[in-house]
Image (cartoon, rainbow, N blue to C red; front, side, top):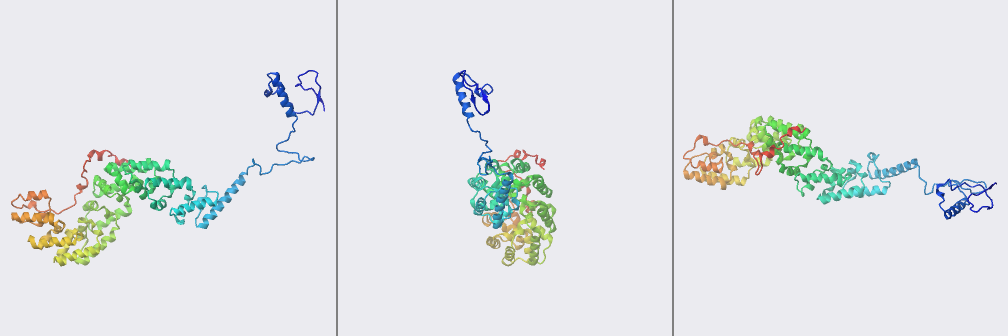
Length: 516
């Protein structure tokens, strides 16, 4: 113990104080105790005295007995934290419980490693139940288990609400999610809304947008500046009318996912090699855009080879495909074999040359049923009394006879036999007689010819337009140059500009070859 003089005593002559030496807080050394006036000095003196008289206790050590035992804070303190190892073990235990739950349902969770999952089984059960309500099965979930990483409230509900507001039918949600479950990971604002806006900008009607999404939900995952814009630009470049793009994509939205260089451009170029002009190809795409979905190597080329094998002439391939583009999408060789065998059984002999002529004149023959063919041949043989050879000649010359309405054919034949005075050989020479309307064409024209007492063939009478026939009625005789020509498909009909369509529209994007 030692005596100290306290410098804080204001009055001189004050008694000395005896005290255990406390920590020194000198006002001159501590800026907190800057003295400005006597009153402030007295107040600071009081603060120092009260602090000195306190019992100092360490925050981490407490004296609990004479032996000064140390008390360590317990783990239950508000400020205690689990170690990183403990947190890691706890997460592993939670994941193991979730995995056990999923395995119990038949879901294989192997692909979920590394994916953030709910910490409780109850949350995962809610997700599985919600997916079940949407119609997805355990098999569907196993096909894309990452869907279990989607929150019901944050991911699934906002996406499905948005699709519903667009007009996507709830009855299609199951099929929609089976085809493109990744949509549940998408952001409505960042991912989905821009694609929908882009589709609307392609002149797809608002009511058709949900139908496009139902047919091809994968479109919601495409980048706007990628495949979609390139495909559309190429189609416009080859001559597909801008105002037709919306209709084309509505009927076959899968085009938006086709790469130009790998799919569309090779397909267009191959059809050009067959002899179909590029503008005609564009018109075919407008009418039947699904033809672009046919594999060029596995479907189209083998079918073209089959046509050549069964007698179709190479120069006739272009008209055949242009008349009936679906012909290159069928499994053609078995159909051609069946049809040729059927004709052989009916007519006794029917080689590839006859088969080729039939296909060139009516490619749709490959889709006719055996029943329809037999009924029409029986009509020619039995009702009209043509011989087998005559019936064969008529079918090869005009295979459309095998697809006409039999009742109408009977009416036309009855008028021919009762009123017109022609021989059966005239029908054999021009079997297309049955394809003309009895009331609007055959009867009026025959009456006009009979009134002028002209002798003509059925082809001269019928195989011309109304304007041409009126001109013929001005003649006193029939010249050889006026005899009928064999009808054939006119490719230029595909390339005629539509009403209100200018050539500049087709030529505006003529750099289609730049897309690869």
